[in-house]
Length: 338
Ligand code: NAD
Ligand code: UD1
Image 1 (cartoon, helix red, strand yellow):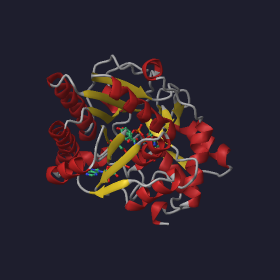
Image 2 (image 1 turned 180 degrees about the vertical axis):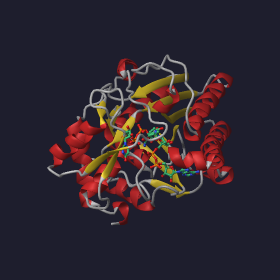
Image 3 (image 1 turned 90 degrees about the vertical axis):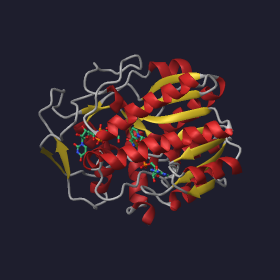
């Protein structure tokens, strides 16, 4: 199949590109590089050993996107292109709503005008909100979010459900990611956040490589076994494989289907720190600080539906996630900037 990856130069998109190429699909990447760089696409080509058609373009730009849809025979779209920093979304809600929702609408219009029927969407566990009991199951209602980023995901899920109701030929797969970490096993590709990392694993990796002095653990007094928050961390290559399964599923089904992509096993912040130290024999300096506003004490996935229907199951362990993160970071201390 020919698969268009909107936002395909980013962390999850680039790893998914390698997974799709390795499985024999063709990929077309469209990215405006607002949170990535062309070097990431070059590394995809290097790791997969294949050429990738890529366009430096804004997915909101309908005219350019229509040209891309006309130039390429597209069977499926995966929509990764979004702004994703929770804290920044509180300060810049208009930019977040504009970018995340407009990219989705533009892709849906281009698909309608060129007869493309399969759409896979990067959603998030954040749509379960604060009200649902854990573990999260796909049958639960979407909850209410504490920030505009989360609301964009809730809104886009609703937009996609409505689009699917209006077009019985459309196939939409909503993938709710839990906490993706890790990197490609080659050490040539990984997560390359701009500025100070917001997320736990890239922060730990930058402490390990000496770019940051220490990690602040956000809260040590949560009602969890060791007092720190627990999350469902998933290796980015297992997540990438979930996209491969989702694309194949979308090609043979109609309507909307939602899947959690997680392991089903939670780990605490302290467990992650210690697993990283043990897997890589590198000490991580940390101190326990204040809680971060908006953090939930713990959540993880019920991942049975993806296994039952997609035949997808995670294969990699927490030690693999820590080892691959470090392999990427130590070989690329400044990320893709060399
Ligand atoms: P990322 O920032 O690395 O990748 C997103 C890519 O989209 C970037 O390359 C960016 O340059 C591009 N982009 C953004 N707006 C664009 C636009 N208007 N036109 C063209 N390109 C644009 O993020 P990621 O971690 O790879 O996340 C991918 C998707 O998965 C996002 O939608 C994100 O919200 C979602 N998600 C991520 C996580 C996570 O922890 N990483 C968790 C849940 C959901
Ligand atoms: C965050 C977002 C979530 C988004 C996800 C993926 C918030 C509140 N939630 O999830 O909406 O879908 O990223 O982009 O931002 N931690 C530390 N110190 C740090 C960084 C993190 O202790 O320097 C802790 C956090 O408190 C949390 C855990 O590590 O308990 C994981 O944090 P993070 O990687 O930011 O992911 P989430 O908060 O789960």
